[in-house]
Amino acid sequence: MNPLERSEKQAIEYEQQQILQQLEDWLELPMLVLSFAWLGLFVVELIWGLTHLLDAIGIVIWGVFILEFILRLSLAPRKAAYLKTNWITAIALLLPALRVLRFMQVLRILQTTRAVRGLRLLRVMTRTNHSMRSLAGNFARRGFGYVMMTTAIITLVGAAGMYAFEQDAPDLPGFDSYSTALWWTAMLMTTMGSDYFPKTAEGRILCFLLALYAFAVFGYVTATLATFFIGQDADDDEAEIIGAKSIDALRDEITALRTEIQSLRQENSQL
Image (tube, rainbow, N blue to C red; front, side, top):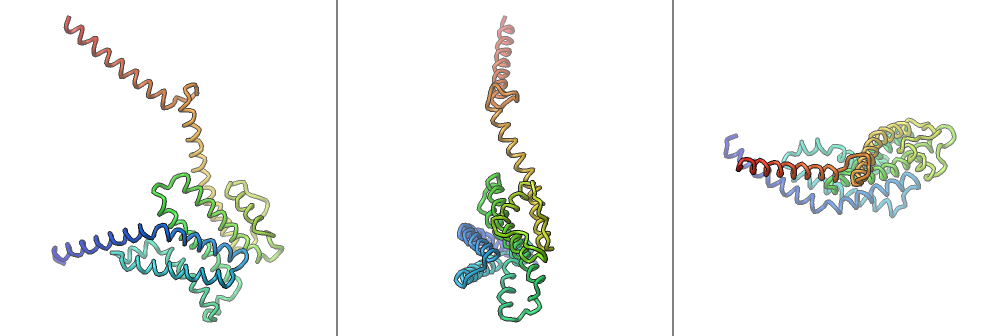
């Protein structure tokens, strides 16, 4: 490829990237709303099941996501790199197709209880990740608010998954209601835990993933709260910790002292 062709290709890729970025800016908020609606429908499906109307709404939202993904892929300058970056999103959009095909009796092999539960676990993970990516795109800085909102969503979805999986336990069901599963998941997210241990393989995997997330977030929340209280002490002149105001005052005094010393030197030199 000669330099002229390379320059033209780079110009085309740059223009495609600009169009893709503008499209993402336009669709950012609508896709965020649809992502949470889609995730909410999934939670309802896990707990109570979907009515025909809600199922139709979910299929429409799924179709919108597919069209959006195809449009972004067509505008991406480097399609292989885009697929590599968004492979989890692609899986999340392909999984509902297996559910539709199951109703068409094309994939009879997936009718076993273990396979259905495995697909359900994969859907919990991928669909939550899809919503989290949409949420992250709307936060310029992923700070404490983003972490708290993400934790709340993961807790709600995780509780729905645990409730759905543990209903298939070989012994007595682990949770008699979604509220019980939500309380158990909340205790897990606060690293307190409870006496109940998941009985199904899918429930144990989900419990392990929730515990990993809780362990990672707990350290961040602890550090953030510690920083907040230290900042409160820093604003108090009587606090034991030297605050920012005290440091600024000390800096001003040093600056004034230096100015005074320089003035004395000048006076002595003139004498």
